[in-house]
Image (cartoon, rainbow, N blue to C red; front, top):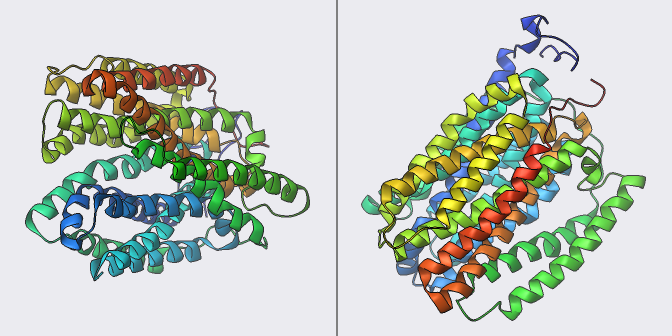
Length: 479
């Protein structure tokens, strides 16, 4: 389908043909990239609509929140199984399963008569969403020559960065002019179009394996990943001064215990059978370093995603629509800088990019730790845009450097592990920073709580700087 990338020792004098992608490969990647954009856009389009849904569906805030929490929990539980799914199914089968499930959930949400059906629809959507990003990453690793992976991964940043940035803006426009159902009516034709295009043009990459599904491992993913993510998210959602709820603590205890059993089960299956999630990816040093770098960055990022809108709306008294517009330039800058960062990665390797990104992340979070009641909006926009560029400098090289050294049979497991740990890290970062905010704000005011939480995020970013220095260019084993 395409010519293999040259060995790592090859020079720039290698024929240009080795770096070319076939038209068929480009079609496959673009189809998967467009589908990933749609499912990630859908993931963020709901958050702005929760207050409207409380009124239209006659439910309380703690109930309507399950539309977001249920989606997150489903994703945390399903993603660990994607390593097995992507090895068992062909590319075409996996895509049809993902987009077919997502489209079915979107259609059900558009006609949902009440909250219960809408929640079920969100769970179905999440099942399809969970499969798309690992499928995209695995396909890129399989199709793209080593020397062009940075550029292609940079284009992936457009989907995973611009889509979340556009979500609140699109949602705000729809809710201002139409019924909430049009959020799903808007997404559904795009999802169906991607499904039709994929059904017609998508070709199979590689061959499915003969792995067997370990039922016990699947059962353990529910309390392990679901318990951790739910417990951490509930700690972060607690009311100021009340402390973590008993249910959050119980979920964390169950989650940690089940996680220990899950890891032990996978290590045993690695010796005798096919594990659900192959932990041998951590035997590759750069995969481990890159994953830790992404975990630290995501912890700082997700807390900031919660804290900055809170600061804008409660301290500066900016409405929700203006808050979305303030955050929009940063998301666009992160996505649009991705292709350039990918090309730079292919030329100079990861370390100059990740170190620059980590230092920029640290500097911006430090600036946020000095926010006051009189900070100018233009300054917040500038810092937020720089922060997102810093994250782009981290994420594209970390994804590529971490996945590059894996052998082909671990591609899908590496993508699944990275995606799973991002979910857990996001919940952990939110819980930690929101808890710090709640404790400090209870005694010293909201602005002081915001500053303390961002100071904690800046301290996390110091670890990102250390990990960024450890990054180096990698090549697949055997090259």
